[in-house]
Amino acid sequence: MDGWIQAGTVEELREQGPKLIKGGIVVFYHEDDVHALDNRCPHLGFPLHMGSLCNGILTCHWHHARFDVCSGGTLDPWADDVPVHDITVHDGLIWINPKSRNSNQVQLYKDRLLSGLEQNIGLVIAKAIVGLMEAGVPETEIAAIGIEFGVKQRRQGWSSGLTILTAMANILPKLDKQGRILALFQGLLHTARESAGSGTRFLLDPLPNAGVSEERLTEWYRDCIEVRDTRGAERVLLTAVQAGADKKRLFSMMSMAATDHFYINGGHTLDFHNKAFESLKYVGHEQHKYVLASLVPMFGNASRSEELHSWQSPVNLVQPIKEAFEELSKNGVSSGSGGSGIDDEALLQALLGDDPLRTAHMLKDALLGGASSVRISQIAALAAAERIVRFHTHNDFGDWISVLHTFTHAHAVHEGLIRSADSWLVRGIFHTAATIYLDRFLNIPAAPRPDAIGATEEVPQPTELLEILDKQQQVAPAAAWVIRYLRSGGKPEPLFNVLGHALLREDAEFHTFQMYEAAVAEYDRWASESGPFAETARETLILALTRYLASHAPTSRETPHTAKIAWRLHRGEKLFEE
Image (cartoon, rainbow, N blue to C red; front, side, top):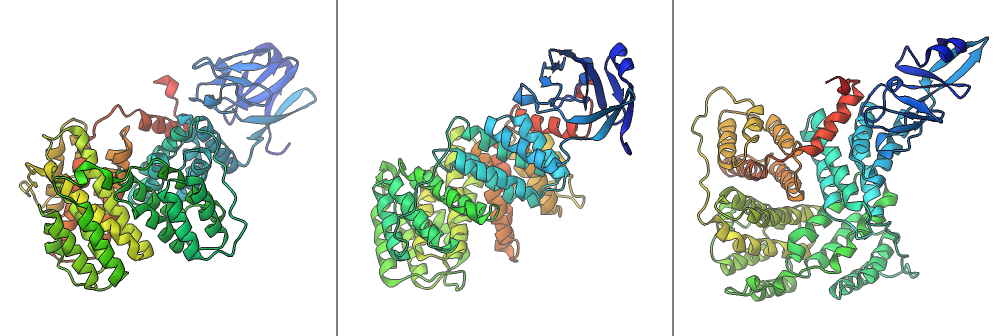
């Protein structure tokens, strides 16, 4: 019995009742048998020896979670199973194995995470995340569990939950440990909520003829999407995957369909495609077909902006852009990030101007002249961020989402062109330019850009920003604080961590997660450049992010409270004593 713990005699246990022993283990005598379990209720840590035991069921007296005293299994899934310890009785003495029966804690936590996702139980998800991180499991591996779950368990396919999860996985390097726990929890919880009650998604089979050319499959895929035949499109897509088409080729095929019409689904379709392809780096290759197929259903009822009145009157944006596409298709467009041929400042001002037809001509001429489509899309994303910086709080609150949609779409176009360098995706630049123009009324009057009044040699503490965001309607004060921080020499790394906590401590809605991830990603694209224009660009992205976060805070903060409970329970804190 080396290493086992002696827990007295059977007779003592029968007469004296439950006994606590070393290691936080409680020993019961019940129905002529001895049982040993961890004494902490797995729900919120209440001592189980203070509970009641009847008919083989141990009931915790705090929230009435019930457990099979033999196996530790719970009748209440929100509580988790309680670990059980092996027992042996020798010459009337009870010996307890200090190690619980399930010694593979990593697999246990993975199983619990999957169970929490399936049953949409936030506390179970949070405790599994904390346990896995403390066990040294890479955070991206934890995110992958949620991505694989979401693409299979939501019949309607990819949507906001998986977008949040992928975005949060992307920004993990910007956060401290507590922030990473919150980021994973927010992403996984939203995925679980969105999948709840949806039903399992079953893939169709690829076409039997695997010898179809990639060009023909692309044509078929676009034709199916054009007539909203999502089932036919899925079979064509899975045929391309089975034939071994690489990610670059698959993205080109799918992004063509996503840009065949203008600004589909308010920009969400292209943004979701971008996030889905980003998620592929987190999951195994065998899961790629599930991820990509999950994008197809959104085309079934997609809105097409060229059909909207605002795109055709009082200024017809559709026909001039179509004519530009025809000329670009006829003459060809250079791909990649090389080349110049356009002035950054001039393009930025044109995008923010009041003459969309001039802007369209300027974009077309620049692309025909060999300008980098990647660079142009980067400037377009910056212009969309500037709309958020200039957004006046006199506008309707819901209009924040309009400028947000434009920015995240612009970001998706930018990242997509980096990924594929496909000439067809340049159409997304024109769609972005049109929406930037249509958003112009949200900058009338334009919110003043904060100045550096109050900048000192002493850098403000980043946590001061959290105190500002504890109150409502702090858009201007938060923006002013950020400018003061930057102009005083504050570093971006601690600022992004605090801005991350400003997001993750809230019961944030979908678009706020999008805003943080897109702004950080665009900032990083400018980080390696020097000069006044790049410096202003970085400042613009931080200002846009800060203003959007401030406009959507504070909230009731229920979600992060659940994660905090899970973290404290893992550390062994006694919540019931407070």
